Image (cartoon, rainbow, N blue to C red; front, side, top):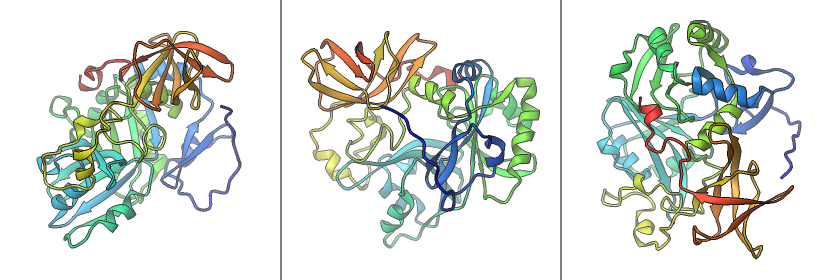
Length: 373
């Protein structure tokens, strides 16, 4: 599928405080939650990918943090999300799904509890805020976009930099921990999470009233001993596919339920009522329809079709890349229906047909030993 670019006005889209740090003639931007973000700055994606795996990279990312407060905040969130929010302890974060009334996945993201007064939900792409407010009802709670901006620092040396700029002891800051800290005078939330399958952390500003360019440069300066490199989404993209991390709006939408996405472990059907619970209890759609695909011959591209030997369409690639570590093409595949995994398959691309095979997600580090280390 050909990729096209159109010049558009940025009048209705937000620019991050780090916009000037990435703005160069060759930069290509995308739109995510009405925010402009740098998709590609024409870096060598394989070189940056290897740097991500051996040192660390800095990323300006467009996820949108929402703040939830109020006496009934836990009960409100219990209604919105499929997992048991009451079990989230202060100082912890979890991956959290929200479903529509038919059980389709409406949103995914990271739900954090940095203190006993508030929750922060770092949502994927979509209008979750208005949907959540529409379901607020009589709860004594509020949910708002507080114009927070997000940076990710990912890679083997990332946590050494975290200690340098915050003083946080790595040994006391485990995978999916969250805390409040200051970096170069900026008050922020920090979580030990990321979108790469590598060791790393994320920084969330408490609002947009700060000098983003100064923070960006400070991190690069302090990160120099750890070989921190400013990068873009292209290097993240390869690693997130290897790690089997799904992207809302690319791999996930409301037409699939958590079971079909292979995310059933994030659904607690025994907890108190949540939106979509009744549909998920009754559904017979429980077989995975999102899987991995490998090809030793070609790099899968969004829109490529999986076919059987008779040419029948079996599914579509939602995202793909060439994995330097696995030395093969990998892709996220959305099946039209369940199929025999031992079927002889081929990937139909603009260049022709190539041999392919189905495989479980993730492709690499299935027990997440890398980010947990």
